[in-house]
Image (tube, rainbow, N blue to C red; front, side, top):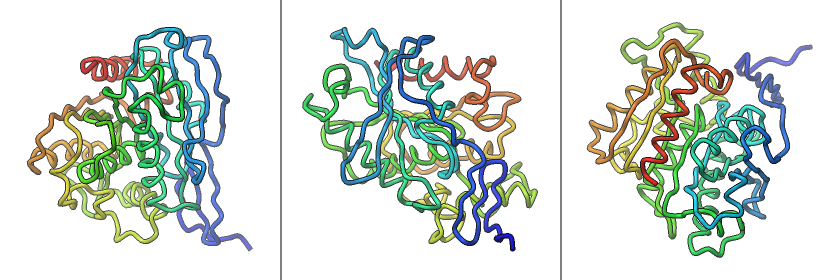
Length: 315
């Protein structure tokens, strides 16, 4: 007898009622390397001996022999909290390119995935990763690349989709709890995963599309109150005005189911009384995380240029 499906998240994953998880994409991995195309070097590090958190670090090869210190980008991958890893070719290739273009160091966080490790595991792991980065502020942390080559006064956070949701939730936490030694005033959210029980104006009312969008939340957070949970619907979070960023860049895709939520987030920040600056860049004719699947297209190149300028404007 075939096991019943609890959440059909095709083409990404299926989760069965007996707890089995079938990941339909995002399972491929690549090893760290010196990338010939970008001349960016990468390596994998364990962030914490008492947890499952690890990361892939990226640095321009030329920076290893230079005294010049580079900004740090802490990156959280997407995949609905369920698929993809920091070792995925999609993210490895994209971060090689971004590190080369922006001349930065990147820390790509590999957090525990749901549903085997339900939320808030990914949030907890991401905070551990931020604390690990902060532990290098005096130049005596556990990782030599950060001690010798990183400018801990210039730390950014970025993520796409579920990773964008993580960035937001780390910002909420930063508003309440400081990290020793560093600040993270600048954040990039690419097609961030926000949702809600009731459709926004112009948002899809198609039951299948709405069920797909909410399915990731319900599958990854079984104790949630639903899609008006403040973790996924910032409109319901009374702490929003305390978001711990000064500058936020939100990247939106015109055809993305999440588009209205992404624009709405800008309005929510303004209405909350948050004192920072938020900017939105929309890619016409594009769908969710198009830049990962088609990094050579014009809109991906424009988005890359925008990310690089956002980081470098603050160098």
